[in-house]
Length: 185
Image 1 (tube, rainbow, N blue to C red):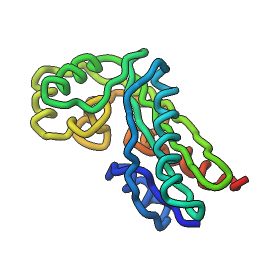
Image 2 (image 1 turned 90 degrees about the vertical axis):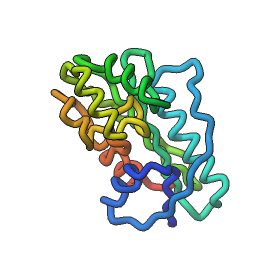
Image 3 (image 1 turned 90 degrees about the horizontal axis):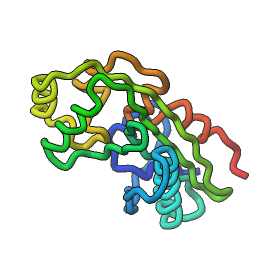
Image 4 (image 1 turned 180 degrees about the vertical axis):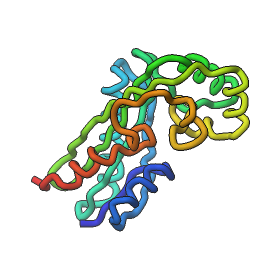
C-alpha cells in the first residue's frame, strides 16, 4: 500500500527516510489553532487531522502518516516564533527549566485512523542573552516549535532529556514504527 507523509517538515521527511520506505509527500492544509484542550490533546488532534485530511483527498489505496509536535511549559504552548522578539521571549522562558515536547503520529488508512503520542521532558541550562542572540542570529529558531531545534545549535542548551530524541526533532521513530506495523483492520 502506498505511503504518504502529510507534512512539509524536512525533519519529518529525514526521519521517515530512516525506515527505508518509499513515500510521497502531500502537505495537509489544516487550521492549527488551539481550542480548549491540553497541549497533548492538541498535538494528537492535529496529527490525526493532518492524516485524515490528506487521506480523504488521496484515495483509499494509500496510508497517510500525519505528525505534529508541540513544545509546552505546563499548559502554555510555544509555537513557531514569528520573529526575533518572539524567539527571544520563548528561549528566555525555557531557560533553566524543564518543558515537555509532545510529538504525535497518526496513520489514516481504509481501516480507520490510529494515533500514538510521545512526551519527552527536555531541560535547558541557563541561557545568557549572548547565547540567545547568537542562536537567533543563526536563523535556526524561526521554523521550529518552541523556537529551537535540538538537532542544531540548540542541542548545546539541553542538560537532560527523558523520552524520545526523535520525537523532539519531529517524528518519534518508535511510535511511528508501531503504527506502521499495526494490521489494517
